[in-house]
Image 1 (cartoon, rainbow, N blue to C red):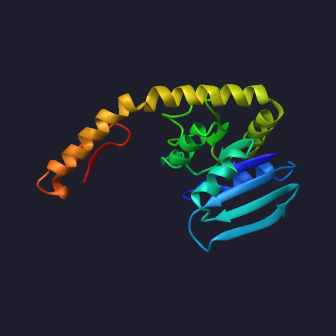
Image 2: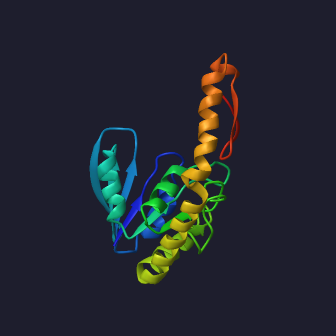
Length: 190
């Protein structure tokens, strides 16, 4: 039972460790920054493997070898974990994520992911157990997440907007004067 926990910014390891400490699981906690390498420690019944600066192919392999992805973050007022969420959903892993701006537009609770409130280690533990004990639920979540990603981020939808963004940036007399419309982040000045 491997749990994959990606991300560096605003991570909430305290809630994660409280949630897994009495579960017999292996938790791969990946992050960027610091010295590259892997450290192993025991927290209660859980084995925590902290991997720093994994090469991308190893990061993807660790995700694919996991049963569950957990994104535990301080995210109620910050959109953190979005790349990790979309990446892990696209890789076909069932995701449990802190409810907040990170999940607002991309996760539907109990449809494309399982959400829990920030700091609620009991709800996180229950979500982990649900997914580990019910492969059918995990499969339904990953199928719905994949369908959602294909629908929302299909190149026929995102390509034209991306092309307009590139043309606006190239055509602008000064990069600092370019204002483009980004459908995911609102108006962004460049």
